[in-house]
Every structure is written in structure tokens, then in C-alpha cells.
Image (cartoon, rainbow, N blue to C red; front, top):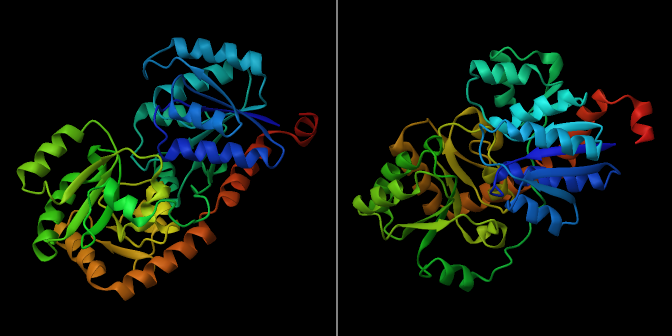
Length: 365
């Protein structure tokens, strides 16, 4: 079996990392993969470093019909048995068009729980299978008219936990922390649905009670400049560190005390899974994707969405109770290994592929 994966994001965000881990897992099961991604992207470099077959394509933007023609040429040259589309917007549309032109079955992964617009519904209905990364995303897809016979749930996954590669002193020096500081990680792109403005309100309340609170904001995105200005204007310049996009989070995330996740919507949240795998409890909102990733009172604390007072109170509760923090963190690590392992994600995707490929065709591949 030969699967072609299309993922056109430039950064190695959560979705792109899933593609990388999936292709690695498939290789271990005797399945060939080719990753088509944006030229110069972090996924292209990471895939090649991992010894995977990967090609870069010019991807100037979502509204680029010439991408379909480039994809048709590559599909005809590579001759995969199946196409798996991992990106959103334009790449999915042009990928579907190219795969259909070549007579290939199409699997499309959906990673967000946003309500479906008319064009999105049309695109999803043209795929042979749609994979939702969580039950919450699947519920949105069903509400949007995606039939159960074409819908499958395969949860996102994270690798096994490991101890931070960085010494504690290096972590502190890199992010300007004093030994008495209380580092809390926030891992999210700077986009509206990630809730950074709600975080600002919660941070003001929490800092008043815990002056040594330090929020490490890992990420990048279109709102970064505006958020920097807003946090500074609120007097939080010494509390918040805009730490940038860090693909090496696993090297030091375990040195934080917990993960604070203020997102108002979430498909599942790879950052939530990675934090729990590192043994960190999570504070977040009780919304479908987050509540599926984090068990309230067992691996973290979830509060009603949109309530900065509740978010601050949950944060302070964990900072003040080391025993609770340790218990929730240990349970989080165990649950991440048990329910969000790479093997289950790979096997789930492979089962979907096999639904679409006759056994005789797979045996010849």
C-alpha cells in the first residue's frame, strides 16, 4: 500500500506533527508513504530528517488553482493507492480535485470543531472517508450532514513521555526565570479562538494573589503584535513572556508547573496531550474538545467557558496545592499513554485505508 499525504502548513504545528508520526508508524507496518508539503516548510525538513519520503511544492496560498495541476502531475508520477488530505481550505479543495482526476480514493482529516459552512460541507461530502480527530469534531460533522457511513473517529496522539532533556537551570536561563518563579505554560497559536484575551483578564486576577506567577506563551500568529501591546498596557510585562514558537517543547515542558489552556474552541488539542504526557495537569475550559482530552478533577481542572474568574481560581488552586498538582499530573501522564498513544492513531488510520482498498490490491502494492 502506498499512501500520499498532503499537508501544506509551513509550521510544524499539531496537525503537521500528526502527519509525521502517522507516516513513521505506517512505515513500521510496511505501508509506504509520500508526504507532499509546502516547499521550505518545517514538515518537509522534519520528514526528511526522519528518513521519510517527502516532496516540497510551491504553495503560495489557499486560493491557488494551479496547485491542482501540480498535484495531478505528482500523483501520476508517484502512483499512490490512496490520497490522505490533512490540510484545510484550499489544499483540501485542490487535493480532492486532483485525486478525483486521477481516479484515487480520498481520506480527509478534520481537526477543528467549527460549524460547517456551505463550501466546507460540499468538500467533505466529496471525500470517501472523513476522519474526525475527536468525538466532539465528529458531532459537528454529523450536525453538518456528514453521513455516519463515511465518518470515522481516530484521535490525535502523542509519543511516550520522557524526562525533559534540558537541565532545570538551562530552562530558567532561557526564559528569564528566577528559582522562586511559578512557570505556567500556554501553548497556542495567536488566533482569536485560542482565548488569549480571556487569559489576560485571568492573569490580572491570578497575579494579584500569586506575584511570582510567570506565564510562558509559546506560539506565533497574526494576533501576536496586538497581544504583546495589550499585555504590556495591562501591566503584565513582567508576568508574561512571549516565548515564540518552539518545536522543541518536549525538551523543557516538564519543568513548568502546569498547562493553562484558555481556548474557547478546540478539536482535541495536541498541546493538551503533550502537556499531559509530560506529567503536567491542565487548566482549561469545559468545551467538547478540551473535555475529551482532559478529565476534570482527574487529569486537570476545567471551568465554564468565558469566565476569567473561574480560570484564575483553578490556576491558583493548582499552584497552591502541590499534592493535587502531583496527583493530577501523574494521572495525566498515565492517561496520555493509555488513551492517546501513537500506535492507536496509526492503526485507526490504517483501518480506514483498508476499508477503501480491496485486499487484493493492497497485497499487490
